[in-house]
Length: 309
Image (tube, rainbow, N blue to C red; front, top):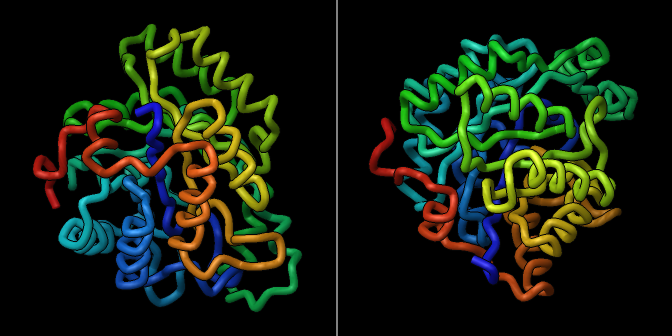
């Protein structure tokens, strides 16, 4: 895999609001179409949230997840990775319900709690729906809750379903949380780690921070004990971190969940735009997108046939 890179595309997310960009997919049809286009552009993993179709508000609606997952499975061979992160106000039971219901190949598992601040966006001059400004302002006092009990609960659901966790690491302390969970027998290497930098309230997009997190993971768990990917939130952070991740031999994540801009003065028109830029960036480092089959082998996944959608 030295000359390959697994590109994950995070299609819509659970924290942004539609007023930020007309490109953010809201309906099932839009999310499915965006996922298919992202896969065709070179993404081998599609990260999935769903939204209330009438408003665009993030929800944990299993019927919407079923429609998205089943339609995407019919139209692409990409790895379909639903979230257990959800969105503001969702309980851990609501967030985790996708695992026993759908038994996906892979799902995200957040390794710790932190403030998830999006409230500065509410100050922008945008055409907000009434719920959107309140939703954003609410993050001034919002803790994205992932306690040891929460992580243990979600990890148990995944173990029973044969679902491989992608462990989301937003700050270096989350790696020490993971070490404790290993000691308790909740999780065990080899891991799939996603270093997420750029969320207000957690670690920022700086080269030293990614390198520190990577080297800390290597020291705690051993070189070769995990695959890893880098996700930068915002622009230019998404592509700065992608470039650094490629230089360091990691995988990368892009998508409208994390960043809405293709260039400094140009909003992305689709998730595929961001994937295509990531593919072009990878080519500068003599790396090409991994196929879904290559991604499954590298990440240790069970295969799409052994899912319930």
